[in-house]
Image (cartoon, rainbow, N blue to C red; front, top):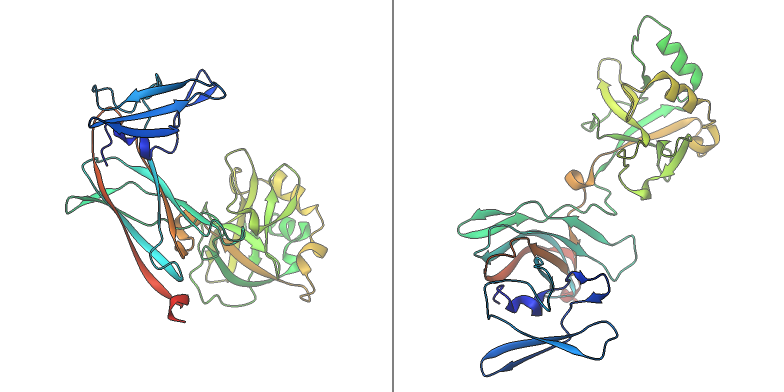
Length: 327
């Protein structure tokens, strides 16, 4: 499996020449110990024949500029068994690789999992990396904290706190009705969800106060979106300190504008005035383990200027109790 010009057979994607034609090979052959491939350019009837391994310009096919070597494989041993995928190793003389892993692609959209691979590290001569956590459809990164009174989510509650001598910063504190039995994740990456049976993110993603279903995934703040974050937990008085992302400790304008939005009907959910509280953290760090009957692995080596070999791709996994092969 030489990646020195012969890898075109394993290249899943190539650049486009003059933005019109794809350079994915359409035919392969060997002749007199030479490896040849051809490509039909778009709707053109003529094909370009390319002879591999004739020079040291690697990964440049059919007049295209040099492109990275890419490969996509599926680890599908014992396809009836649901597995937890733990690690990936490469037997190769190339040091730099990146890529992603996915599973359950053919199932419903709520089962699909995908995550980007961290940088590989060298162990015992091989390239090694832990399987990523799933950045999609994860629930392990959502922690139930407890319940609070619906009245705590009010403009009056906020103004009473910030006009008193007890609190001297712009934030909202909500009193938990129970003593948490979990470690509460706090900080800039901990976003507040509220309500039941379907907890929702609280914020202003488009400048308008609203509740957004948690199925939208981990909130983005890169485009100026504003969301409630759990900044800290005070064990002595059992309160959560809530602020807004992208605004230092909230900002009175954002919080007062938000609480002018009526939340009673949206958060009560028939729970008698009690609101269940959850915290969502980054699924890339805390998400679900990659779990399914198979693992799809996409790999790219950006070093296209040098010849290298990829001997083997090894996947480490463990079976779960959902092993259909046991009958």
